[in-house]
Image 1 (cartoon, rainbow, N blue to C red):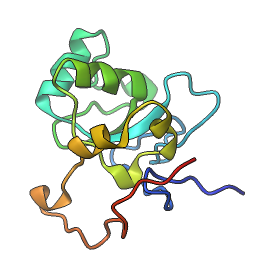
Image 2: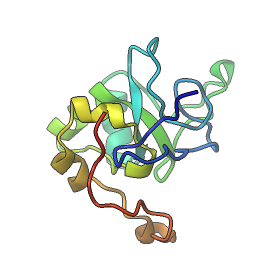
Image 3: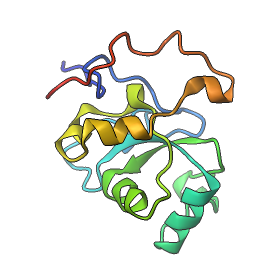
Image 4: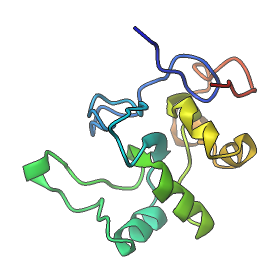
Length: 141
């Protein structure tokens, strides 16, 4: 069995299980061949991004019980489609990225320096950096 790796080249950490995210809804932003949207970026939702996504036709706020989707709010972690995150970055409203929970496959399409610009700082919201990857360098596929 292959272990999923994050952008640091270490084991992919879970993004969120409350709400449960990822293409497989297993809490991880895995690379899945059948996932055309490439839900590989673990992002921390912001009001600005949620408004942007809704304006693009993807309402992430409204609960959709028929899809077991609770709706998201600012501060929630969610596996975003790579293309939507890039659109948001271009529009100046990309949400912060949890690099330890972002799949290494995004490095094919996003420069490491750009990801670093959006790195989520755990200490900002009561978390610690003790579980941060031990390296500052990104892994390679």
